[in-house]
Image 1 (cartoon, rainbow, N blue to C red):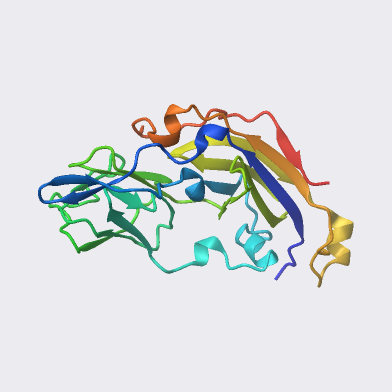
Image 2: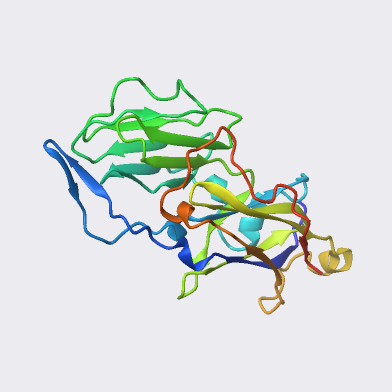
Length: 268
């Protein structure tokens, strides 16, 4: 097996200050109507994802080995099904990174039945409602990278299932909540880093990790030193205030404010 030499990379994401929890609380369904629920409120930053996808993957440096180089299990190797809980007229979590091989389980913990729908896969969910206490396991159809899920009875409820082509990470947020950070090691290659926040791709940037042949030869049996300086790329997100608590209706394909990123990060 070819030794993969990974380089440390730091990705910094800047969000606007108004990207915190929405002002409206959730609700719980009961037989005689709806009752408001007191905070804590859902913070969309907790579910923001950084996706790092290879542009030209090679058999000698598969992206999954980036996790191994970082001392972590590959994200796609997690065979445990993800569970999405329906409670308080919301999905918990709303953003799920999944795989085509492992089903996603929806569990209705509310007191009224709900009917699940998806624009991208109209036949994926049954026409009959999901009863209180019941669960439903669904497999994401092959070829889909994004699957939006809605509730017929409550159109404001929304969940998004993502099928990353590479690795993904939840961001670690600063105390102020406006700066997110991901640090990891990546093998040589060309990647696209994207941020998925509030049900949209809100930033993207190219990343190039060049091959360093002398370093690769000298590090055939060792990992890079922990003190190696990490290359840093910065993504700045401009999220309109209306998207912070109530994103617009989904489209068939996710949109990005920068579909052709002009900047690139390079690991020297």
